[in-house]
Image 1: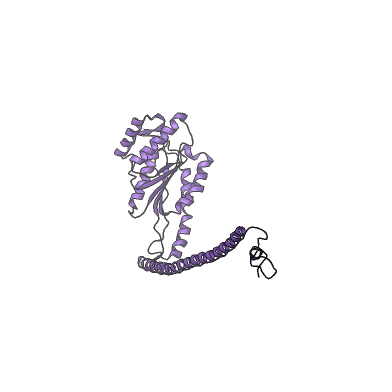
Image 2: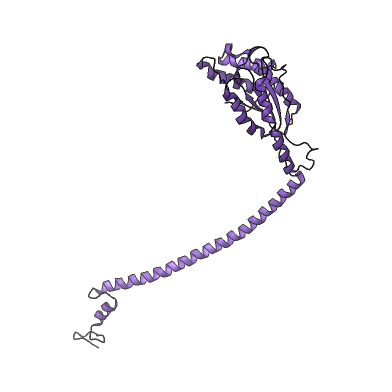
Length: 310
């Protein structure tokens, strides 16, 4: 059909351009707008295709990665299983059971340090946990004459002997250890009540006696640990803390002298922790940090590491 102006018409007598505009959904807007709308719809359709393509590609990537991950997981599981087998085999060869623990020693100060209730509570609260890490534990008391003191406690062998546990059964080991550890604390507490043996506190003598016992049990493959319950106010013999020159040079010289004269025992390979350091502070306050430096330098000059003064 043809309109009056010679143009083609649609079935309703509308010009085809009007039909085009109506079908494009743009009413009386320009053909350009219709073209734009059509292009927009085409773009949206294409974007949907693109998104689906992208999603498909992404899913393919995920699938490939998942398959690779699954394959790698299989390899990893097989590798871990192989390692587990090796560990079990090595463990079987080495024998089950018991992990070696430390050779230990306890110093308990029976002099003026023992008077405050906090000193006894330190021992009861801290020694049991310390003993859990020990296979064997020895004792020494600080008295006025510690090295020759008659106030003694026998060592406790915490770990089961080979005769007691020939197959290194961990259940047997735990049972024997649990029983033996109950003996550790009562022996230490008894040292608080040593009789008076001369005046003052001979801390160095207690350390020498303790290390003498521990050296007889020394095992290179085991740690060696000492726990000291004392204020470290040594005021006997060659070391009187209250009269000590605490200048840096003098401190270092004294630490060296004590080791060279063997008044301070050889502590190479020993860890030392002290509870109650300078609890009864009889010196002037400005000496406290210098005395801490002195004792750390003295322990370290003897080879001890680490050293904690608490």
